[in-house]
Length: 343
Image 1: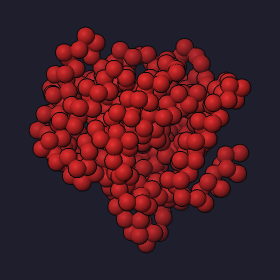
Image 2 (image 1 turned 180 degrees about the vertical axis):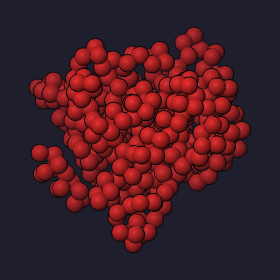
Image 3 (image 1 turned 30 degrees about the vertical axis):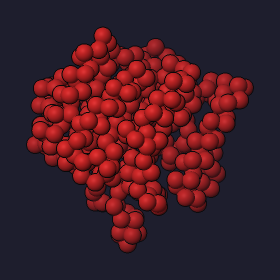
Image 4 (image 1 turned 90 degrees about the vertical axis):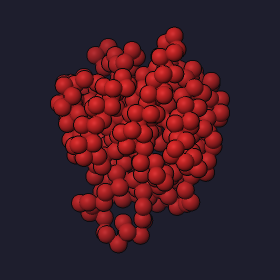
């Protein structure tokens, strides 16, 4: 029904407006107790065999929502009721910011892809905390953190420190985002020295707490093998808990969408089916090269249960969806979890 009737209608509208509409619809549906129960009962697959224990956390199932969908921590309870085992909010920045000029979100239906240059648009740390204090369920929440656009790279560590301290009591794990292609100069922080500074600072704060929180690093799909080797070294040296592989790509290779249309869209991070293979390659490389030394959350091009299984078989411990959720509809987590039980 979703792909036959609802999606064609939604895809005629501006993507960012549709996202706002979908968020409002979810809030409304789950505010009605009888609908909440009905949808939750239909969407949720509860089975002990789906549970995963990772970096001290117990996930009800291994399927989560990637950062970017619930930027302002407004939908995590509702997404949990759609059967997801965890939700990563953000990217959150210390101060609220409007992001890049619109239009900044584009569909490529022929490629089952999106291009976005949102630019970390969000309401900021204080508003995120306010929303997180309203948590009604025990859904596991990750906090994806990034620097403000106006913050120069030499002071980026201060932004990450502010976010880590501010969100610490309200999220279950952290993902450090230095790989988004839509913030000017952000990806320069992927340099080994810059990353070590940020992660060591966060770890120092983390280890001073009675109960440290897991820290993950989100990786770009555009890293080469030498850079991936450096990632393995960084994880070992800093003692962080794992990685999220991968973010969006700046590549435009092998798209079936007409080149003129892609060129007209311009800059932005590409997500969806076109990065599926690269994501899996990186997961497999990191898993094998490190000897499975750390957990990996796999994300990128997951549209079907088979796509999720491919990531898990390559070495991922958990998976996240985003673009596939938009293209395939609200019950994607259910389909994946049902397939996992048949394995």
